[in-house]
Amino acid sequence: MSSETWEESVEACKRDGGKLHTPNGLPVMCIRYDNLMLECEHGDHPDYIFPVTAKLIGEPEMMDGYPVEGDELHALIYHDDSIALTLHECSYFVWHLRDGKLIRSPFNDKDRWQLDAADVQKIRERSAARALIEKTRKKPRWFVRRTR
Image (cartoon, rainbow, N blue to C red):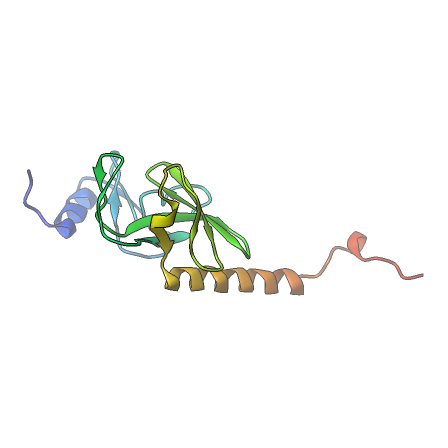
């Protein structure tokens, strides 16, 4: 087992020709098998927006035979005004933006997870900004309803 630090691993990957893919300018959190360095495990997904933190509610324990260690970093890949869709370890999760609670999960643990409040706020702000852009965007001429 190697005793190098995470920063040394990232530097070694860069020296070995690894590619950096951090669209949000965040630190590298994942090095893939092909030396692609990502800010989030699924940060190379075509619809990736930014990473969000899923917080474990309650005490860590075994789930499906594996130890749960605490917070998880998910890749946000879709959101609207009421839900968010994230990707973590090749599984999709659906969250309420009202309270950050998990709606759908491939596991039987939806009452055990919640999105971080700061991430929920960041998603809401992005939704509001997107709605404002849509509202102020000039409609195509064919879209304008005639009032005659």
